[in-house]
Image 1 (cartoon, rainbow over the protein chains, first blue to last red):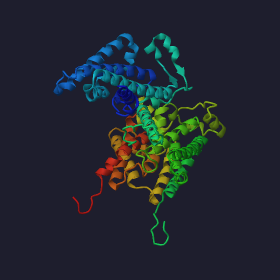
Image 2: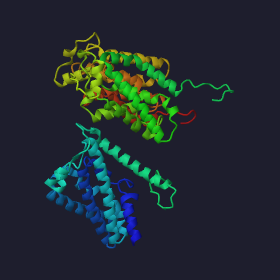
Image 3: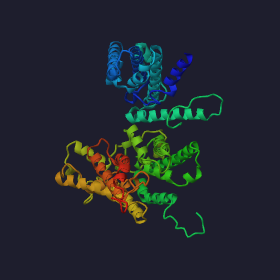
Image 4: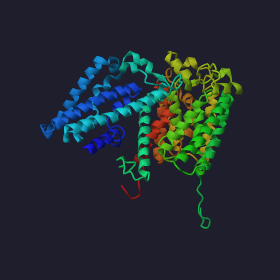
Length: 229
Length: 332
């Protein structure tokens, strides 16, 4: 059992990361990562939906006829997204307005449907829930990283707008790291998101390759990316 | 090369090609230095130094031999082309950043010289233009005269902000006037046929780049289809629009000698790596660039469209080559 748990954790966070390896859900990933907080908020929302959908899909996996399974999955995901959307609108209304259409669009995030179809519908609920949690965390981590990179280059700050997520006291969290009058506007525009994601992908592949080349006795499986195979 | 057999020497090797292109840029560059001051020269030096350093760094990181690639002058050429697009009196880190981006993301990320789908110089320029839209269109007003060396160095090191009467390039002037509803004829106070040019600066610069380009054509270092295509593509729609509505559209001669038209047509679009390679493909590639320049100038948000047009057609070049592949003899 522990080996299964360890494998789920490693897959979700690194080896099979939805954003960096499966390259799924890129639309919200690229669109809302203008700041770290926006990325974190959408990451948490996606994480909640993914956790819920994986659990529910796994619970009903024996009752659903295979012919209609996709429709049922989409229905489940859509209900969960609606719930998350209403929760956000109630408690984090400013953030909800900043993220706009990308909260309802979590429905179309293929990482979620992909996990439901490829993993959760074939596994017991506990494993499926763990997988959903880890995949969500992996996705969220990439959103935060990319948001942080873009915010740093574009505004020179980090944690700008933290008060939307953590309440009014959190506005002191904003740190000015680079003294920029007007930052690199490109980093905040869509091309900056693509270039940033490309750099993250390259870094991950580079780390994987370096680990694969290291002649130590540790048997680390090579990441299933095209570059390192 | 082996010495014994009677090998034919290749007509052009890369270092010599790049050297000759650099040489052909000299008259236009000198005119820009004369007209706009030391800032242009400083930009060229900053860009070239950054390009060499970045190229060496990237080659080192990719564990490739450094010396032969540095000696092919391709990085310096890209840097000089980028520098000639930049307004003078920029803080020093802007040309450095742009060149770094051009060499790393325009060239080495794709595998170095010969593999880059986009023109690195234009990629660097567009990167700067999109990132710093305010400062990148500030050309010093010509009536102020070229700024002195000390003034340039102060502006470059960010010690003093120079008051610049904002960009009075002919393209800017035209755009502002049209937006204000002034008919074009009210702007005509220039020289003869070129009367739309408010001053002769850009006329002279473009003329000298045309001379340099004709020299390259005569040496057969660039494919004639590309500049011809660019100039035709720019002239034909401009001519049609000017005939239909002469009060709202500038005449073709204005477009040909304004902004970066000649530099783009002869030196940027003809980059052998990122351009189309089939004869017919080259013609279409040039036409596309010319038409796009005119469209962006007339309706775009930025004053000039050469860089965007070149990058867009770089994207289309592989497709054009595929469509225009010469028929193999004996095959349908």
